[in-house]
Length: 421
Length: 54
Image (tube, rainbow over all chains, first blue to last red; front, side):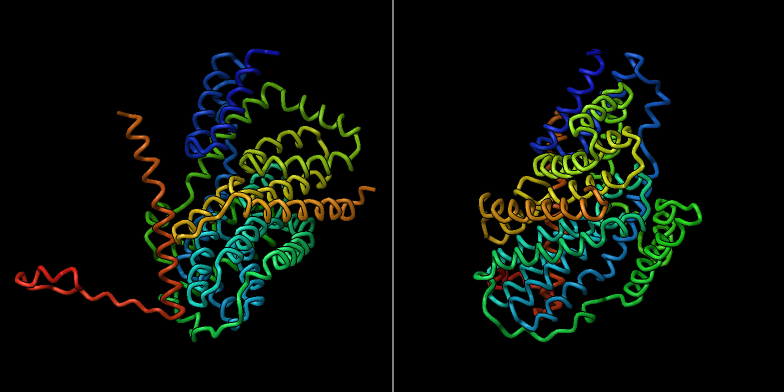
């Protein structure tokens, strides 16, 4: 094996290991790995400086940053808080209704907000209502975490991994919905049902809800309506402009500029609150994967994997789904998405089946154990601040059951949806 | 020295999430029915010993 291949693989594995063990922030690990890859690659003549610069896909970063700006403006308007408040009000103090509506809103909110931001919002809502009604917050909290991880599986902007895969595979907003929306709706229903059965005895008894009007929590009505307008416009443009050759990154950037102009908020303040950690993690990791791609090792892996699958799309799809799903339970699902996209690309298959399997796998594995990703860790951190400790086994028991259930259903869905038998 | 600075920077990242969580929680509590009113009280110097009671 060529020395550069060994060096690049070592850099890749070290970055994954450091990220998984949270020894440094993800961005630092990926940027250091990216820098080392670029340095060794240029020194050993694997690629040129100009080629190294092309490793970073600007379309993806523009899509990510544009969407983050629009959502940050919407978040400041209180839009997502109002949704959570309505979901609580809708329950009328009935714990079963409250549980289901909190699960649905958690998943819905995470279709727009980053998973971390959705977790903060729903954690605050859950703790508040649990204190008011004297409920055990744990079932609501853990279920919210699992639903946030699940929410947005079928939309291009629903999660960062979806953006990575969507841009690489050139999947449009409509493609995502047509391939995966039905699956996501069914997964919501199955997961909520499973969580309800698991937590039913701990949900509490019916209580009187305090009287409140959700819309009254909005301090700037003007900003609220503008945010709703921009979000609706963004989804509309995602759906329509793809026919006119405008990519999702163009729509996201345009709507971000519009949001900054219309909201009249301080752009510096908005930009400061964006999730730069994720942006720089992706940028750094793209260098690492770009270097590996140049050595042809990913091509070889891709060929070998397809041979292992016996050349059968059925086996290849299920392998992709389960491997990416299980790997995402221990490794950052973003790293899995960034690694697998060039592997699947190099197979040269035009079929969306493997892409759909990768999208489902990377999305579903993120809330299996407390260490599967940043969302479970944040949930546990928030509970700890409230003086409630969660054992690893408490979380993992629920996480493992729901992840296996979700991956099993997704296998069936992919087989039926894409006619794999 | 640099390592200490990097460590400090890592640690400074943590409160951002906590701060936003506390802000969100306060907004929810206010919306659901626990209004907060912040009143600034100027205590005469002679009564400074009573400050903890307020």
